[in-house]
Image 1 (tube, one colour):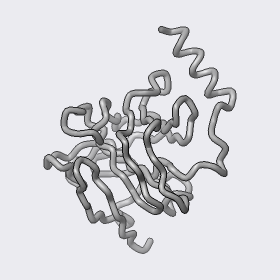
Image 2 (cartoon, rainbow, N blue to C red; image 1 turned 30 degrees about the horizontal axis):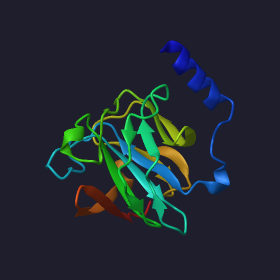
Image 3 (cartoon, rainbow, N blue to C red; image 1 turned 60 degrees about the vertical axis):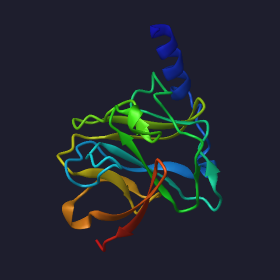
Length: 177
């Protein structure tokens, strides 16, 4: 098992990634200590990871994966789901997959860790976030293209949730900085 993990990590280190110009699906924001910011469809405040499509075309997420441990790249497989341009999906990182298809089998660590988005074995996007307090998110500013940063209270993003089946689609209204 260690050999497999080492080989996979070496492949990633040697540039087996998707070319930046081709990436439209990306990790945009995450919150490991969600204690009262956003509820899932069962009413729980779980860790979450926001995925977005910044491209002009819809993208089928079949074959995409999320993980918090690059040595285990297939921890969460996206269901047969299509993400439209400028759309945001929430994946609940609650280690509670029986709650629905958008619930990952891992949690985020509020002391910080990495989160990786893959297409098959190709690394599409990644971030390593620092230790974060309760209800503090880590995201890109501006959305989809900016640098990663802790989102302070004064710049919180407010969410209008639309639940369609088991998918949580999030439309964001960004406050002025």
